[in-house]
Image 1 (cartoon, rainbow, N blue to C red):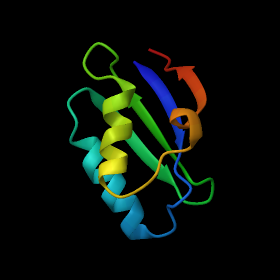
Image 2: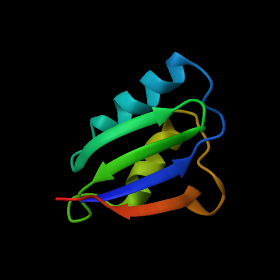
Image 3: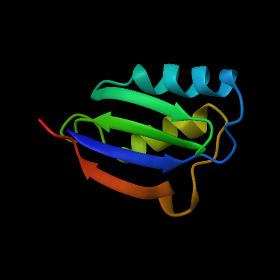
Length: 81
């Protein structure tokens, strides 16, 4: 499992949180998703063998939110097993 944090500067309300978390959580291979309104980012834990980061970014953008410059990669951490 990988943990990725993406910049999503347009998140500002509970509807944003619900929209992004709901759509990303439905993706096969996503273990967890959390939107932080204060930091304006989305943290996703996913199985790289099942889904790639591009599909997650595409899903967030499909909800009407831009993902930060350069794919929004601001942090990559292995998740402890």
